[in-house]
Length: 168
Image (cartoon, rainbow, N blue to C red):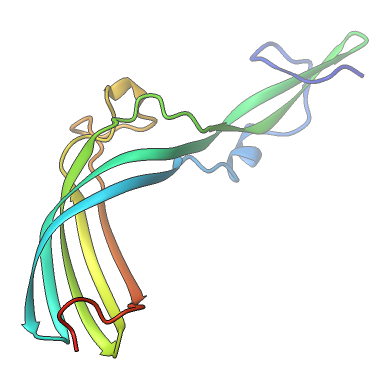
């Protein structure tokens, strides 16, 4: 029995149907990014020591990037004089940083509430201003304006290890 070769050719028989296999196909592109971000914020204490807000800009550069997607393909096996074909899902993965802009920037806003001494709950929003990609052909998906400027929301809990300057 030969190893399957992925091609789109004539087949004598099919082991399955493309509609059955494509039912489990994930058509989305999944991306993971790890960035080094440097914030430049100004803040205001609404309730000193309890509630504060910050706003400003951030600058970031990518440290790691990965992307994956799936596609439907035809695996063909030839034994004797018969060509058998089977529809399969192929997973494409990459960890290349090519095409991602090295310098990115955006705007951000944050609200912080101290629930216990040294324990804070923080919520924020960040909007990237420039396109993440250097050229649109590097994008694995299509947008009407041919750019990717993500809007992200975050929430978290922080614990301050020390009291800090000027805090008694």
